[in-house]
Amino acid sequence: MCNSQSSSNACCPAPQIIQEKICGNFSTTTDPISVWTATDNSYISGTFEVFNSDSTPGNATFDVVANPDVGPIPVLPGTTMSVSVKRPTGLIVHAPLAGASGTYCLTLYKRVLA
Image (cartoon, rainbow, N blue to C red; front, side):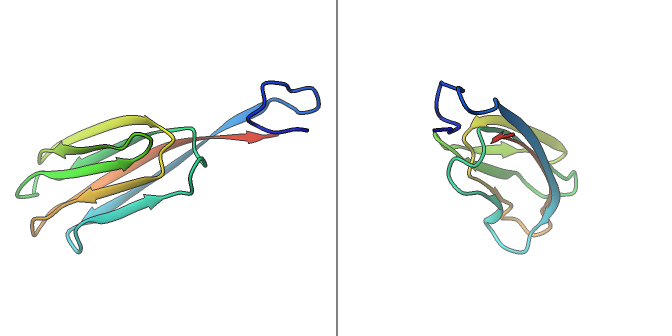
C-alpha cells in the first residue's frame, strides 16, 4: 500500500516537497495575535521571520508552536528575528504596547505525493 511514511516506494512515486510563503502585517489590536495555524503534521518544516517596526515603543515577541515549541523570541524595535523549526503548527505574535506594528513571513515546506 502506498503511503508517505513508508520507506518502500514499490508502487508509489517519490514524494515531492512543496514550498508555501505567507507574509503579512501586524499591529496592536489584540495581544496575543494568532497569525497562522495548521493541522498537525501538515508541514515538515518552516522558517518564521518577524520584523518589529522602528516606531514600536518596545519589544515584540513571537512563539512558534511546533514539536518542540520555540519561544518566546524577543524582537527589538527596528530589527528582524527568524527561526527554523520542524513540524510547525502555529505562529503567535505578542505586541503588548500601544503603537506596536511590524511584519511577518513564513516559509513552509510540505511533503506531498505526486
